[in-house]
Structures are given as C-alpha cells and as structure tokens.
Image 1 (cartoon, rainbow, N blue to C red):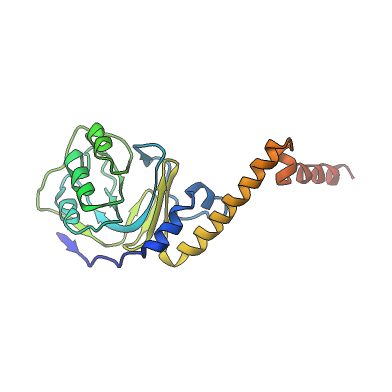
Image 2: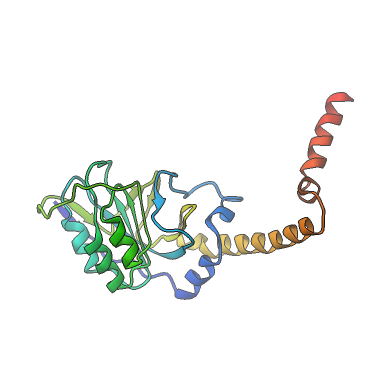
Length: 224
C-alpha cells in the first residue's frame, strides 16, 4: 500500500544559508544526536549542502514511490530515503540523478545502495549511500510512503527537518534547533582560526587548548 502525505514547508533560504556555513563535524563538538552512522558515505569530495528533508520509505524492490517523490520535490529539498534494511538492490541510478538535477534537488541520502556511479558524478547531484549495486528496482505497485517519519542511518527523520551534509557525514536537525546549532558552530570555527594562528606563531597545541594543564592537574592530584 502506498501512503502519500503533504510536503513540509520549505526551510527559509536564509536559515539554510546560515546552516551551510557550519561544518557537521563542528556541530559534533557540542551535539551528540542526529548524526547518521558512518556507513552512509558521500560519493563526491569537497561538498557541503543544507536543505529541507523530504522523506521516502522505500521497502523491497519497488521503486515506484521514489518516482512519485521525484515529481513532487522542490529546489533546495534533500531526499532522504529509508530502504527498510534492503541491502541488495540499488534505490536509484543515473536517470533518477538527472531528474533530481533538473528538479533542483540539493542532494539525495539513501540508507541503502545506488548504481551508475559515473553518471551520478557526471550529473553533479550530491549523493550519499552505503555503496553500489548492479541490481535495480522496478515499478511493482506494491508499497511505499512519501513524507512520513522514517529512520535513516540510525536517525529518526521527519519531513521538514534540516539536513546538513558533507563528505564527513550527515546531520539531521529539527528546524527549531537549526539557528542555534549553526551559530554555535560558526563561532567555534571562527575561534579555530585563532588557534591556527597561534600554532603558526609557535605555540604548542596542548597549551592553546588547555589539555596540558588538565593532565598536569590530574598527575598532581594523584601524587599529592
């Protein structure tokens, strides 16, 4: 059975632009939830995207629901696809990536496999997956869900969540947490520039960040 829900409101472009200035790994310094597991990897380097999550639950070998989703997505959306544990069949390949590019999709994240890696790179749409497969889906008219809550990479994803992704990993944020997380990460990144400058000037890393003092206090407490 197919379940079709309403598209979420798009996250404002200004919020997404702010979020895209943040590195997922920087957010990882102060946030511990919302990070997909490391098995879902980018198929391109030197990229970072931020967008509105549009979710797809796509079990088995029926690709019809993803075709439906591709007819609904908007510029700036990120398709997040739950394959429900299917680990043999590619969710999509080159033609779907081209359709995504034409629709202005910011990226596709699939908790499963993809195919046509060369075409994915050629079409330039950022893709994250668990790897390649040469077995493909079919339109079988069986099952799937569009814009419902899903699980992807061990993370609960709701339609309308914010997604921030680069080659290091993927972060999902409730939209109400977006600005606070982005601003904290950007401030951290600015502070890191000062750290690098002090390193260039000859200071030692443990003195700059305070780890040497922490270790010395620990040793002193044990020997007192």
